[in-house]
Length: 211
Image 1 (cartoon, rainbow, N blue to C red):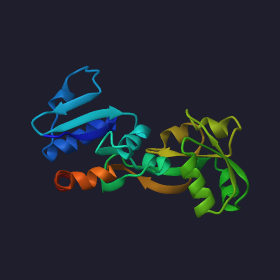
Image 2: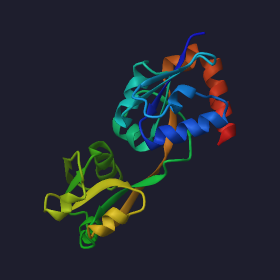
Image 3: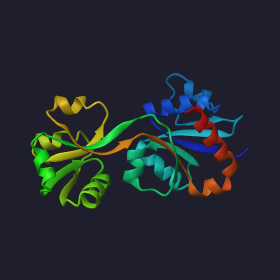
Image 4: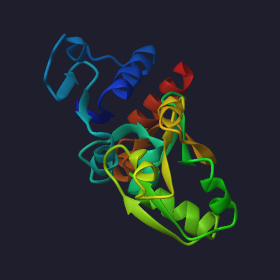
């Protein structure tokens, strides 16, 4: 049997995905081995191959056909804009994409002032400010702790993922505007959806039932 290959986002998302897949009847005992450093895992009986990748790379693997399916946060789908079908909201990994900053920055947002925005998600920030708010801003891409942006005077606000908001509060920042809710999504390669439609649709149906 030809493998169905599934790209998983490393860490908590992969663990939650495999819990859901098990409920749906798709297992991979290899992945349960303590302390394994393997990146690729197979279930020969079911013809499944799983591999672990960094979140931003998952849509790339799916677009180019290295994976038939992938599980990744909707923030990455929005940021990467890769060609793939988004077929299912898996309902976990829930958080929000928000504009955050010190309280006084709220006025600048309200009056559509020219401000600087630091973010790991420049495409999402641009889409929000330019297309939804029609506000001209200077977007600065950061790779690390974006909360530092307003604290050291690099930016007025940040665009980032908010789960509990505790990191913001500890640094004197708050949510000023909410861009959108986020969660883990199942995506499918466009060619695979045609070539292996029966297997993939069966998998989607079983996962949907398990939710």
